[in-house]
Structure formats: C-alpha cells, structure tokens
Length: 503
Ligand SMILES: *Cc1c(COP(=O)(O)O)cnc(C)c1O
Image (cartoon, rainbow, N blue to C red):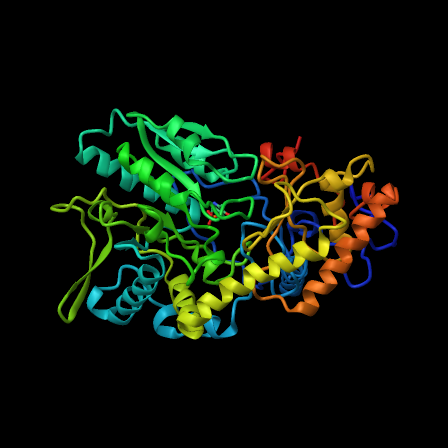
C-alpha cells in the first residue's frame, strides 16, 4: 500500500499506529479463495439453455477472518456522535440514547413486517398514533403524514399536498411558482423543481432574515407557496414570520416551513401559531435517532386544517376503540401514496422513546440548552472568529464567516481540514451560500461545558495559528487522516462506483 495515491506513506505497512490502512475488497480478494468449503457438486446437466455464464464472475474471494477484518477496520474509520463532538450545522447531531436503541430492538417492533395484517400490528399502530399526538401537540397542527423517509422527502410530500389543495381549487395550473429565500437548504429548490415548479429567490435583509416587504414584492397570482426555514440557516429566528404567513395566505398561497431547525424551538414555540400550513420534522435530527451514515431518516409532515384532507395515504383513522390505517386514496381527497409502506418504524419507536423520556418540560429544556450551547460558543469565539450580521444572539447554531482569515492565505476549507487533525469532525462549511466562507456550528444540547470548552480551545488555537501566518499546517491538513484531500467535486460528479471501470 506504500504507493497508494494521496496517502502519507511514513510507515512500511501504510498503517499509522492502530489506524490500519484498508484496501478495497477487490484489491485484497483472490479469485481462488473462499470463506466456505463446499464439496464439488456431482456432475449435472445445466437447464439454462446454454445461457449460463462461462467467464469468471469477478467477485473477490476472501476467507471469513479476512472478510471480518475488512469490515471491522472500515467501521473504525467512521466518525460518529458516539465517538466525539459532531458540530455539523443544520444537521442536529445529538446524542442517541441507549434507551431508545433498546426500545427499537424490542422484537415486536424490530421484526414487524409491513405486509402483516393490521390486526396483528395493533401495538405498532398505537405507537404511531401516540407519536402523532406528540408531534401535533408540539407543532399545534391538525394532521401528520408519517410516511416520508427524510426531510427532503417530507418537502416533496408537503408540496404534493399543496398541489392537491390547489388542484381542488382549480389553480394547480396557474400557481406554478414557489418562493424560496436565498439562504435555503438546497433540498428546498430541488423539491420544488422536481414537481415542475419555478423557483423565485427571495433576498434576505442586511440583518440575515427575510422581510415581509421582500415577500410582498414577490407575491402574485402565480405563487403556490413559500418555503421558509425557521429558525433560518443563518441560525436566526425569522421575526417577521407571522406577517409573512399573513401576506402569503392573503394572496392565495400556502406556507411550507422547513422544520429541520426545530431543535431550537421544540416545546417553546409552535409553528401552527406562526401560520404554517405544512412542515417536515426530521425525526433523525430533532428527536434523536442515528443518522449520518448511522441509520435511515424519517421526515413526517405536519399539516394545517386546510391541507389535512389532501394528506397522502396511508393515514391512521380512529373510530372509537378501533384504530386502522387507511391504505387506499379512493373516496378521499388524498393526493395518493408517497412510499410503498408506512414509514420508518424503527425511527418512530426511537422518536417516541425520546419524547416520553424527556417529557414536555424536557423537550423545552433541550431546546433552550441547545440555544444556550450555541451562544456559549459564540461568546467564547467572537473575538477570534468573525460573525456575519453583527454581534447578535443566535438560535441553536452559530454562524461564522471567513473575514477573520482574510490575508492569512488560509481558507474555510483549510480551516475545516485542520480540525480533522485535531480529532474533530468539521462544522458545516460554505453553507448557507449567502455568507462568504461560511462555517455553521451546531453543538446541540448533548455536549457538556467541558466538551464545549475543549472545542473552543481548539478552534481558538487554530484561528490564532492562521492569524500568525502558520499556513503550512493548514495547506497540508489533514495530516493524520486516512486520506488527505480527495477531489470532492470529481467524486460527486464522476463517482467510480464499479471496480474495474476506472479510467
Ligand atoms: C437536513 C436538512 C434538510 C433535509 O433533510 P434530510 O433529512 O437530510 O433529507 C432540509 N433543510 C434543512 C435546513 C436541513 O438542515
């Protein structure tokens, strides 16, 4: 492995301490090796009409211990919230309690099958109803669609619900524009474009929030909806949200709220009171449950009374003592079905465990602690790093720009890579796009003060090092990672997904 590209081969083996170099299965496998020992079959006459393969199938052969080591070594390269602070902004990487994990592994939930007759899954339906009750209480909304499998999927679901409501009004053809602030997450315009809507960008004010007059100027009879994130991706609460909702409704549009940042306000403020018509909740962010390489997501969408009739199937219907899942849209105003089955059961169990173990007061406390932690970082770092939009309190994430690196030759990317050498996963960088060299940090409520202090000390040391002109450590970073600087754009645009097709 000594000549592996982009790898610091300071040791003979390519391993660095106990961080072992791990080649691809195709590099270490041999065609003549197998993990199982099977007798040669008796001679037989093939029945595939001469279509059977004659060339080797090209799968790598490994013994069982080799296979096991390969995957265990790979797993150790995974950074996770269980390994350390994970400051990605907008992603809410919080602690996932072992209690929730234990609940999700209960046999009745873990081994449930989506095609099982409803009568044999009553407990699961009751759990889904209980979770729905919590989500509706926290948001003050009327209905919830549980089936979307991620935040982005929830956006699609919300916009499809809005489209169905417009169709019922005979305006699905005329209202084809969706208003989206420039600071929005990329999934917002992508969801709108996927459904054939035209996106009209709304600029934010100098203070980082969207102003009602900018929305008023963009509204018209062609507008289907606005998609607004609150708190927004700059970590600021949209203070004019109620007036914005009023204007959108007055002009005949709907208000979709991106709820990815609900961790700042859960239990403290309710989207229903802000005039929201549809909003996704990332269960894998706000309500714990592993994500980021650690598990599937879940993006239930809460709906206002105006949109509730158009929600997708399946939905839960309670009739006295009986609870059933309505699976077919016929005879209802539902826009139809979004996914094959009912949603991510394991995530529902974890989210409800989170909610029950926190209680109402605990959920509000978690939000307040998340906001406090972000402001603590802000207060401890603002003399060495720079904030856009002035020296203001933030919500649950703190945003810095790259003005403090000006003239140092160090970029936001270099700074993030240097954090890897220090044992930290970088924060979210270059997002939101409206801020130059953005660094968005979300510590969440799970970090102790000791953990935050260590993080602060590290960031201060790096900022001071950059300002002293020690550019080399940044240009070379990361020096201690399994790989240095892969070409991320090429990796995303031209991924090599098949061994052997490499050019
Ligand atoms: C994470 C996020 C999304 C998308 O959610 P996924 O669950 O990753 O699909 C949308 N908007 C914002 C602001 C987010 O942070």
